[in-house]
Length: 218
Image (cartoon, rainbow, N blue to C red; front, side, top):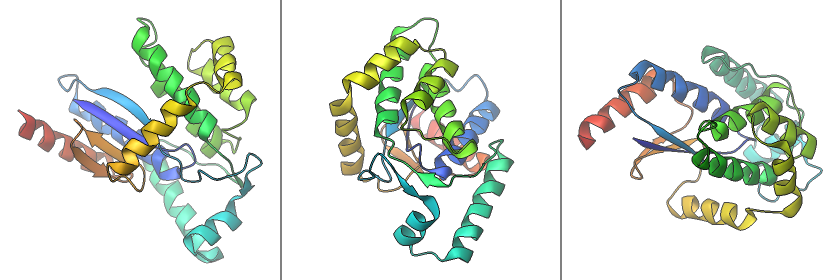
């Protein structure tokens, strides 16, 4: 079973959705052979490098007031805790394009390596934790390199990727592909290129959907 997890580091529901999906895969057991790939999507593609105040930006973008924003964040914290993700303070919103470039590179390393087949997933978790758990800038070089180190990737190679601007075209092309495929919000879980599960669903929803898809495919 091929699963494309379309998401953005800046998306809190993507952190919830990834942990939830992984819990579902654990429940499904080893008989479900899954190839998990992380695909890029930017919630704030025009965000400047210096970023913006998160509360002001989110209230303006989604038309929320202070009470609605607080309620939304409370729901996200509860849903995160239910699947093992602890949200911290996220006072600032940043550009995530370089994080997607590094994730693309990590995916290539994972496919080429016999010893690090899980590198892209580990990098994704490290970046989500850095931003949503610790409030760090996922576009800053030191944060990106620290995440690469946590994922067991070659830090000097990661530094070269960031400095060179490598994989920018590949990330843009992938983003356009998923947008043209109809993805307009994330997380979006695309199974075997044709089944879509939208949003940060609870583990039991992911589990049931994946079982149904497997039964249909077989």
